[in-house]
Length: 374
Image 1 (cartoon, rainbow, N blue to C red):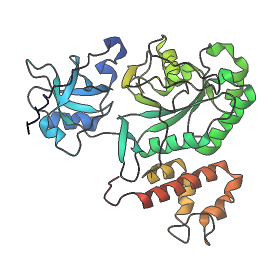
Image 2 (cartoon, one colour):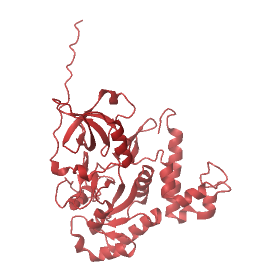
Image 3 (tube, rainbow, N blue to C red):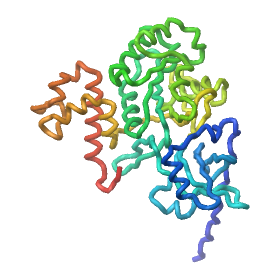
Image 4 (cartoon, rainbow, N blue to C red):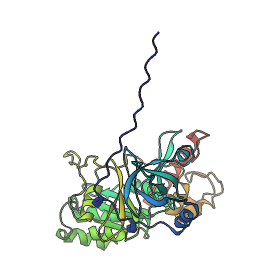
């Protein structure tokens, strides 16, 4: 039998870089003092400090003080346990003479790791962005109130991963003043007073809706694109989390002051936009910091985020520690301090949200494959 000819292995084509106007300046990105110290103590000759500013189906794009270029991984890095980069990662990178790409020698430890669980009981944590300062949880305001469950999930993930949280309610011009006010109250009831809430219009001018602005401000939210800009000051990095179609790209275009990012058509049946973002990339915001533009997320599974749950609901978590039974579900057990202090969850959206997420995490912990490391 004739042997099959071996298929020639071809090296993937290196994708071109986007226009440099879409990328932040190196001076806009600030590594932590620990990351700088780590780089200075470990970098060898010819090694530069770089930041991963774009990830798509090709090689990561790295920005250094000198230039931006595509990069691949050093062979020893691909064999290690920590060999996957994310947008926002600080790396040690080399640019060998005569080589068409840079070489990432090391990924520096992250100050925050915005990650979700992807897959079933043998899945893995997927980092959405690294070294992020604030997560902007984006939900659309149209004919119904926002999903407090989705907002709470995103807040728990953000807190657990080491970032601040703010909520941005978009498409307010598709709602009325009562819906704006009730939605802000709902978010405030669940997340408390410490989380900023901003309400923005969609494509129309912020200045064109005085009644909506008044309704938002009357219940403690701020209004407009400039309020979003203030959430991510110069030198900081944010990421928008939310499902497809809630207006993230439209909001980024408003922050940029131009139609730089593609937006999708809206379905007439339910007002939901189509998925348009397919690449994770950093976008420099004029007069502010940098925002990671990322694809919408269909799901956010609650796996291993117990610390984040306690940070979003510190009062309920403190009460839970005083329950008679360590594995108390706070539904029927005697000696439950949570029920004693907070009553029936049917009368509290905040308590119901906590119990729902806590139950989901207990279930996921039981179903995980034993050799999966969180």
